[in-house]
Amino acid sequence: MADAELEKTPSPEALTSREVTPGPAAPPAALLAAMCRISSDALITIDENQLIALFSEGAERLFGYPASEVLGRPLEILIPARHREPHRQHVRRFAASGDATRRLAPGVDLVGLRADGEELIVETSIARIESGGRLYLGAALRDVTQLRRAEARIRELDQKTQLAIAARNEVLTVVAHDLRNPLHGVLLRVDALCNGGDASSRNSLEAIRVSIGHMDRMIQDLMDIARVESDRLLLSRSPEPPLAVIDEVVAVYRPIAGRDRVDLRIETDADLPLIQIDRTRIVRVILNLLTNAGKFGGAEPRVTLGVTRARDGVCFSVRDHGPGMPAADAARAFDRFWQADASDPRGLGLGLSICKTIVEAHGGRIAVESAPGHGSTFSFVIGSDDAP
Image 1 (cartoon, rainbow, N blue to C red):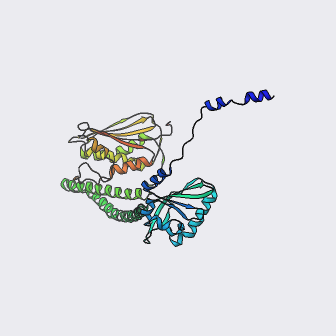
Image 2 (image 1 turned 180 degrees about the vertical axis):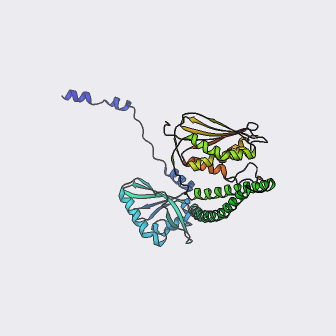
Image 3 (image 1 turned 90 degrees about the vertical axis):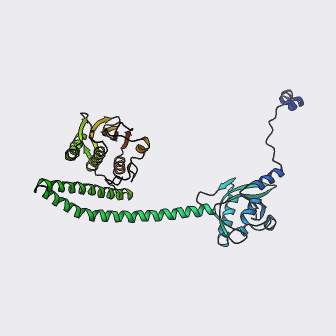
């Protein structure tokens, strides 16, 4: 048995020839001191009695004290009186927790006190260190006073902006509602007058009716923008056959197309699935796209209204053969209040933006394809019940 034990005992030669992986060497004290000097953060170490044991040059710059004045003094000289007891308890809890490090949660900052009495907000990380049988706590502090003040100012401005938007939307809603009532009264009387009188009078009244129609659409745009910004754009959905939607659109748009000499063509797929939509709003989207296509379709506009099956639903499209748009204009087509021709008095630049909002509220997507000299195609897809 003794022989067996001897065989298990390595020889001195084996011990000296064995490869030993050295551990990391402790950095020299001079290097640690240099790191403390070059750090832009304030580095402070306290002992178990919360007396300052290390005060870096960054800490001197931050708090305005030379290290010689604070070493050995209580940490609380760097804290406003009202925060001293809560901070003292926090330090005690961390020291007793056994955690190696801790960083205060986002949004939780400490308040510091400079030598000149000015308060500052500091972002803090702390570490627990045991050396020579004693416990030390090290802290890295960064001045975030200006950052927090800027954030508070941004929050204040954002709140004021939201209040202003709400007030503006309320005014828009009231004004638009009150304006539409007399406008509709005028429209009814114009319609009645159009049925009588001579041709010259009827032509004049027709021009008035067209202008009223433009004003009515602008008012509706303003009301919808107010609803969108206040999250009050509610949809009343029901299962609808796409071809019935197209029929309703065409019934409304045919007289407009005849008046504006638009060559309207219809292209549809058969056996299209039902779609869950707010029919009134989707009809409005398509009418808006048709109106734009006729307006920008050139001297003799030719517009094609289509509805086809898409991979994930049903696609409605409106294609014109007008001058088209450069890529930069197409990219901004759905921006609110944007118009390629800012001098155009026929709209507010809201129509396409509202179309996008309505389509996206249905969970759909809208897009435009256009190029100079090749016309434009606006299309949107609404999911169907049988879509994958």
